[in-house]
Image (tube, rainbow, N blue to C red; front, side, top):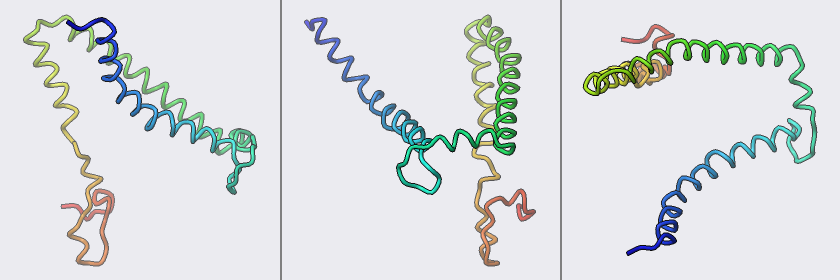
Amino acid sequence: MKSKTGKKRTSVFMILPLYLFTIVFVACPLIYVLILSFTPQEGGFAFTLENYRRILEPVYLDTFIQSFQLAVTSTLIICVLGYPFGYFMARLPKEKKEKAMLFLMLAFLGEFPDPSLRVDYHSSEKGNTELYPGKTGNHR
């Protein structure tokens, strides 16, 4: 029979890969970007706040405001559509809930992968490879 300490050790070892993945692929890049934000654009490792002062320039400030407005708008739309749909799905009987979840997942798979990201290899005969055939008119 396993003791409680044996179970705790097993569960620590099971969660360890998730922690390592999070540290390597989330925390380390975020720390790197934070460090880069305090260095000059020319390179080097001098400490500067110039990058944070530049956010008040009109082009960066307008971009920041538009990004914030887009984030708020999309959040509100998701809340208005998502919460009632989630409530509706939670109230369904189990059989209908599974079908509703299937239809919801199928809606997300409809255009995957995005055809605008395909490479048009047929145009390579003409000497160019179009990355976005939908925008250039070379699509079939």
